[in-house]
Image (cartoon, rainbow, N blue to C red; front, side, top):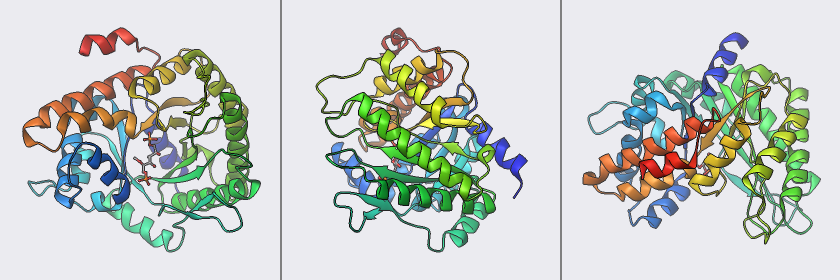
Length: 341
Ligand code: 5MM
């Protein structure tokens, strides 16, 4: 393992003004997104949609450091025969790959899941590296509810995340470690804080036990936010202050960067939260975005599966990428949203 090179890639993934496009929706998830805009989820439509994003010159060159791909996409070619992964490389962004195989019910733990995909992972990573992937992603899902999460769910998911991360580094691939505490539910921000703290502490304990080099990874956490159904929604300032406090307590400074998931926040909320955190002063790590929905909802709607809407889809994507690029430097302002509209 070449740690200097892993650290170089991880640092580039969280470069100031840039962040990660999470375009790694599995077949089930992309179908849901396409259903919402009335587009059939065929292989061709998935290709056309992602090609539209990766050919968005301004967004890709200036605001996107890396793209997380799904297995189908990393082997797909654009309409003109260029591999989609080459479009990403040509834009200067780094290609990455989702390598988990989703979640399964966790035995003896009703309502909880464990993320699977470790079998044959070493062989798969080798093929992805040869294809050009320089980072990978694995998402663990922790739900908050009555009596959950259990220590069992936190522990087995942290163990799997660390196993995955160690395998990635051995294959010269930077692992994005994503332990997502869901924001569904009616819990308040303090409950989210407390659960996320337990999850992050256990995850970093496992990473150390399994000898993962913290300098060669990126963390992709949720923010400390109120549950979607909570009557009292925390303000932007409270989310920023509590999230940064939480991360400072749990994430060693050796980690080069933290790239948040959006988790169901609206586009503008996700941007405002990131911006407010970056305005809080000097932080030990780079703090940026690795958004799926908060980057793609607008371009999906603008495109709606029609070739004549490609330019509008690219404009919508570039706008969100630019807004989040500003937020990653604490330079965003709501008036910039209005100006573009
Ligand atoms: C883009 O969605 C990713 C893949 O999800 P599925 O395996 O469920 O299809 C997902 O892992 C994503 O990278 C993160 O959850 C962050 O996405 P959001 O939309 O929460 O920013």
